[in-house]
Image (cartoon, one colour):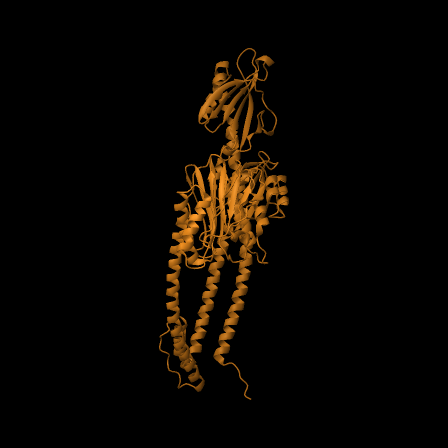
Length: 628
């Protein structure tokens, strides 16, 4: 038997492509590794330079503030009592960024000690005299002279920095007094907002104890300190406590932190002026963007080169296989969608090629027939989908509009359909201070159920507007449905009338799951009355009417069986007990929150399972006469 082997052109193509693949991959991985390391080193250097710039700007502002008392004394000399009284307000007028200015007379006898203070509020300056003493607690820095800086926490969102320096007043005898200037730390550090770090990076400052001084993220700043941030997010990153410890200890370093699924680079270093801490945060994808752009260009160049060599080798291969060249082009044209291209005649080349030509000819004929059939099917499906989308829009218009009676009642409904249109329904409206409401479930699914649902809603609106009895409403609807329906469809329906003045509810239940009553303490109970037969089964059937009284703060939760019958992957029903547990978890919330909590619980239970039935919720929160 003759041994088969590859021809020269095939071997050449294989060897060239294999060599390009090995060399290109090796070069790309090597450059990728070294360029990434270089980019990370550059990010560290840039963060270090940026922190130095922050320290320099902060020192410049602090030095400027420390010069204010010296300028005042140099300008006024010894300060007499009249000038002393006006001095705080004059300082605030001259320096708009100051928050307050105070003069302390610490050497006066106790009964004459006082503090003359001017402070800024809503861009206006107010002046007062108090018995306030000079506070020396919380000193964070002493100047080379006799002045000192201290931190004062006005409230969790407002940190104040105060600078105090003594001066001699005029009079006999002369007394040593103190002038104190106060500035908000966020105003002192407002230059941080102008520092751009790529697109979304930022700088933050904290004290050596970890309390925030400036942070652009309100959510993080609201936590108050590094320790609270670590406590909240420690489960997302195991090394976060160690990172917080290094930050407060005044270490200098660069680490990575995942936040919201995005990797961030975190640079931290001390600010020696006040023993504060500087942090710089920037998404790694931004710091590495030049590196990534370079890698993309490199990969494109390597791919372009590989494709160039490939096409050269391919051209050589095609040149040595002329009988198949045109035929291959025709086959590719067919693969690209040009089904009617004329196949080149290669039957004279060899017997095998003759069979190949006939096989492709047969395939082309079948593909043309299939494409025509597919076009017709696609057009029909698109027409049906358009009609279903229109039907869904029309069906959603039948759902009730929100009722604005927030002091008396809060109503929230939600309908989640299993198909494009479904058969669940709910309705409510208010007439003469009475709330008429209903929830139902039409047998079947799809467009027939949706049409049936629309007719039930229209009947309920029409009948309920003329009746004040839930039983008569059900009787009338049942009579109309039985007269006009010739198929086996029916609907379970729960109707009720709530008197908003008294809280009395009259209701009738036509085969629907019993609602749940949630009292003001969060206790959940089910209606004990047995459900009657569904609407549309017995024409002359008379429905019963029941009555109960809602206490202020109580809620009614009405639902369809799609909620309790929702199945998990293990074929377990959501059930009434799980529904009650999810209601208890939302105790004390409003109607909207209760609907969202129950919907979320059902979604978690059925995750990964296709919804097989419509699911509807309706919550009525009776709030009349509640103590507020």
